[in-house]
Image (cartoon, rainbow, N blue to C red; front, side, top):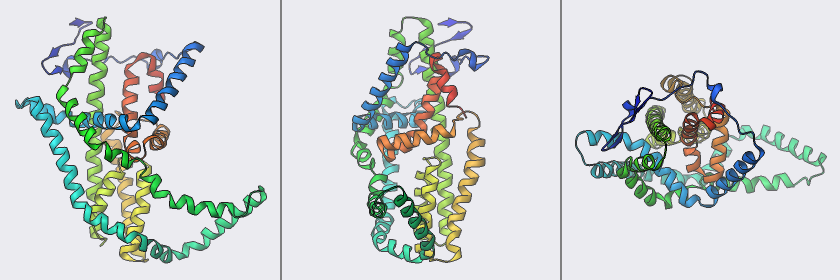
Length: 380
């Protein structure tokens, strides 16, 4: 099919990226229509709220599907490489899923012992950390006394704030891992959906192209699909490689500083780096506790924390912007809001998926004319 010098060609395995050219407007602001009819705005708001309610209520069903879609975008290049060497698509999909399972199982097996050891130390270690950091207690007490005085001026009960703080602290770990049980329970479902998504290939896209009535709609559907798959796959692969480098550097740094179980801390840094901004902040606290427990309260106990901060400074200010450049520029405020929102929705898995989902939304909005205003709003 040809139009305006562009060709959309279907093959046995789907649509090739070389045959589709994305059209860029001369000025993005020229194609940013906003809905102006009150009825459209009202119905859109109702649909949006209903959509959020479904996401929250049906998290156990939707979260495995979202995880499978993201993993499919990550593993799709591997499946295509295997197809190029004449491996059947079903076998290629099975190999990709098997490699993922082996990687997850191997990592879990290697870290089970160290993680269990640190978890066993934690109840006894927390009082030790508090005693070793007792020099910080005086400013903390001053802040608490100031808060009590302000509360008394406001007419509140003097003891209310002090009694509520321990309850919040005791629930911190439960809040942090609120979504882990859901993600673990849906792991088998996620892998099953992932396998069939990889096997199906572009079946859904071919069916969509067949039922769309106009050629313009067919071409736009193909463009959006190819653009999303190409860019999100590139984003996920790039970010995963960057995070792997951060994890390796952190593990080597912890080993050089004499902190026990450096492999565990490298994996922790790798996982936390998938959560921009908030992940490294949590990592600073975790590595401070690990350093104090391993090295004692000495000046060199701050060395691992400082080096961890330096690694993330280099990664965040130089490596990631240089590699990703302008391809995935997203407003930092939108990133923070997405992290908070999806953590509230789905817990830790939601926080990890927040930025990839935000990138997918931006790419789709950039390709759909009625939504380009929102896509422009998400730009940095």
